[in-house]
Image (cartoon, rainbow, N blue to C red; front, side, top):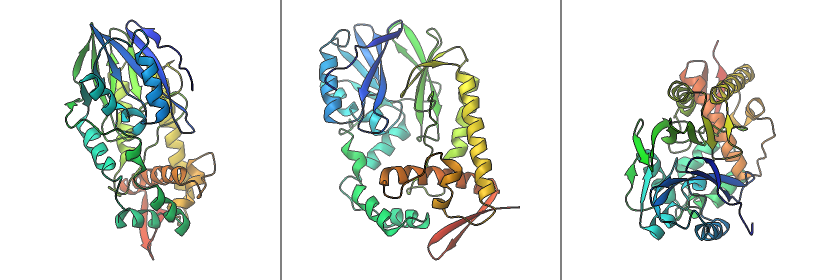
Length: 334
């Protein structure tokens, strides 16, 4: 877009900035927090020409024309970390991020010039992908790094329970898992705010996926645990500042609805698995919209989330996996 809305104050010293994204979900919310003589930024937008132009305009406009003091990133997905390298170098400041998010991002950025590994191709073939879908994966492999500026070569680690003073207020790090390895939410008791990143969104559920690098991972179990952690450590009366859509109240109700929706999806999946199914066969039990095998990005997300659900059932002893002629088949137990 040619112009962006001015930073909008959501609380004392905390401003909402919306940046464009080149996806179906066409925006990300990032947060500017007053930090004495400057300001701290939480999340950065993806590395695109539109985002770079938006930042140039925003940085020339009050109150963002003061020095940036540091960049905090909730997690390593490109729409959150993509401009972190550019901003930290421009202002000579430190990147604050959890260790697993930083290291995972470095690994994925390193795939930019590689050919897709045989393990990854086998992973998607076992899920039931067609030859054409595998060819689409080969063509897209390495695109992650194209949306991320070179990361700083060092970082300041954020850890669960850490207290971070920004300006006149203290923010507590509350780690979440499942959507990404070590996702940092930020809770300010004094302001009654929770910057939730992608861990809790008001209208959609975050993608929880298994990836080729760890095919037997159980991120859905991690995600369920994160719902409990957030409910226990963050009170219901906060204003939630999510990465996408609008700010909202009613955190605990939203956490309950997310859990209920996922429970129902797993029940539908278990019923479908009364007969053996491949990964690509279980999409109707999990997603409202049809998944196109010609849309490589959509197919990848759907496959990852379906495997997260299947691995969850397998590791609870409620389903079993059998490999037949290079394709994995799943069936309910009992």
